[in-house]
Length: 302
Image 1 (cartoon, rainbow, N blue to C red):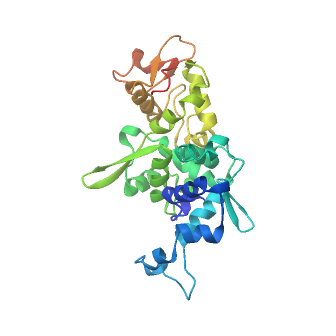
Image 2: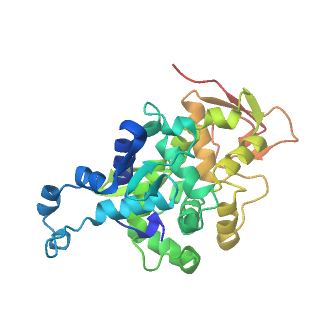
Image 3: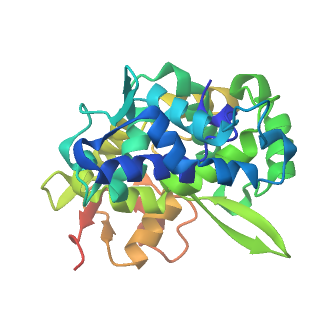
């Protein structure tokens, strides 16, 4: 079972467990102590929902237990005997007490989607499906998402029919940086937009280079996170809902690149006709009707 179907395994709860372990000596703790510190009896006792109250004399802590289980299953944490620790196989920066919390969204994105994690394949398909929607007309709430799933006839493919998929999709896509939310008419709305994820990963994507072709950029992006164009999960989704036109980006990826150019992080240029990709709905964002051959990174901002 993935985090998509484990409603109590929300991003903030997994972050809380990881953040605590990140700062303690040895980055490990006995499971019972970890449970008592992060989910004390008094907290459980005062939860108003009777489902959370103790049965007999044993406290029920599904929020902690589900979050811990999913953290171990994805490889963020490891369980050895009665101890829980941060996975020592994670990159050094991901385990650094000063950096680990900031890098956690990218660490989890890698563990969920780029590590051959079979448990999270349904989650990867759902995220890739949402990123493949038209950003200018994307479903923004539970009812609209369910309607779009039915219209595109992908319910069985995405395995969305009987899980708390929307609340989990909403929570996790926002946390990792694939979407953002706002309030419209008093109702919460989610928007598919990977700007935050791409911006955090410029250093990896450019790998010491200042300028790369748009095709190289997209290939590197899909290799790092296969939810994007040409990546494993995106190709599975597009086989279900229809392929993009050759050399066209999706509107969500194009919109993210436009935003990043407007914010001064990159410059999109047409330098040749051999490496072109087309960014749809360019309007006045770029010259040449959205035909782009190169992406120039302007470097880290102070």
